[in-house]
Length: 249
Image (cartoon, rainbow, N blue to C red; front, top):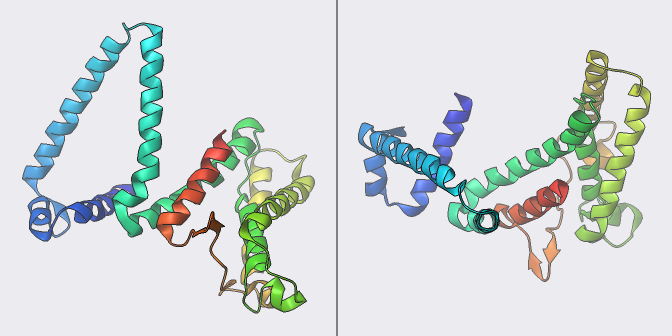
């Protein structure tokens, strides 16, 4: 139900980008889909499913070269859609897509730990937190940044990015040493404890002079790529997309 509600809200916002209030009222009544457009959507989905079944049956008879062309066409179409998606859906949904991309990155990392190594790690967010705070401390121009604390020049986002990755990897390595001999539920509980420890440390007054406590680190400059500031969800989307593609390949 939660997924359906979120999807419905995304569809409503997407329609509002292209339709005026009058046209939108034909589809929705108090954020609920009316019977007529619901029936129309059902028919369209049914026809699309029938067409896809027929297409798969006929395409299976084609030679191998044609199937490669179709595969490349699909990949190219998907790539174009991913590149144009922030321009089509607007800022609000782009922000949602950016958050989804962050969770996809975490899932890709868990695919290695759980899928390949067979280690049920519930504290994977620890590495994310350490990498994010490393980026914040080294690039922020606030009183928590390294510039105000040590008097050194603020580092560029792209220079700090590999440093943050290495620090996150080293943290994961150090935290993995005590639990190498654990398996099953014991490993899950131990790694879950690490994640909870990081959360409490990040919010504690003990580390507040370093990482800001509950408020976090402020005034972090936006990444700059070829003279373009990647600020706002529609531009940050491309950084997350690139990171996901890099993690996949």
